[in-house]
Length: 41
Image (cartoon, rainbow, N blue to C red; front, side, top):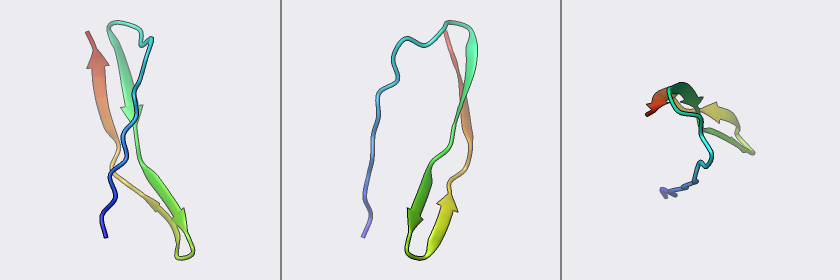
């Protein structure tokens, strides 16, 4: 089963690099996704 989650980022500073990473905690442990980065123009 695949679940999709979304979020909205607001009030980001221009010309700033941001980093994001997903994580999941369940009965099997903690799991982390790949880190992604983007620059807000």
